[in-house]
Length: 182
Image (cartoon, rainbow, N blue to C red):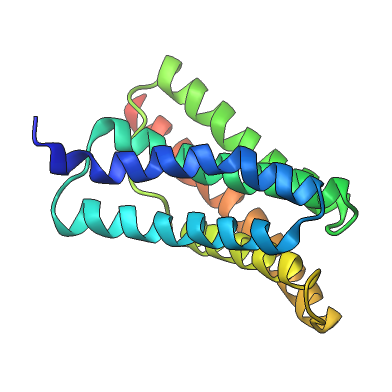
C-alpha cells in the first residue's frame, strides 16, 4: 500500500484528534488557543481534500473519515458555543437536526436501498464553509470587537444553507431510492 495515499486520512484523523482540545478550550473560555486550533482544523480540511483529489489519493476510509471529522468538529463547536450562550440554541438544534436527518437517511438507504456514496452537494459544501466561518467569527468576537450585525448575517446564512442542504439531501436521495425501486 502506498503510504503517500494515506496522507489525507492521517490529516483527517489529526482533525478528529483536535476536536477534544478545541472543545475543552472553548468550555474553558480560552478563545485564542481554541481559535488557532479550529483554524488549523479548518485549513487541514482543505489540505486533505486537495491532496486526495490532486493526487488521486481518495480511499474508502477517507470517504468516511473526512466527513466524520467535519461533523465532529462542527457539531461539538456548535454545542459548546450554544452552551456558552454565544450561539442561539435553536440554531444549534437546527444544525444537529440536519445532520441527524442525513445520518438517519443514509442509514435507511444503506439498509433498504443500496450502497451510500457520492460527493457532497454544492449547497452542502457552502453550508460547511459558512458554519466554519460562523464558528471562527463567533470565537474571534470573544477576543476582539466584531460587529454584531456580521454575526447575525452569518447566523442567517447558516440557517438558510442548513435548511437548504438538508432538504436537498432528502430530495436527491429520495429520487435515487425511487429510481432503484422502479
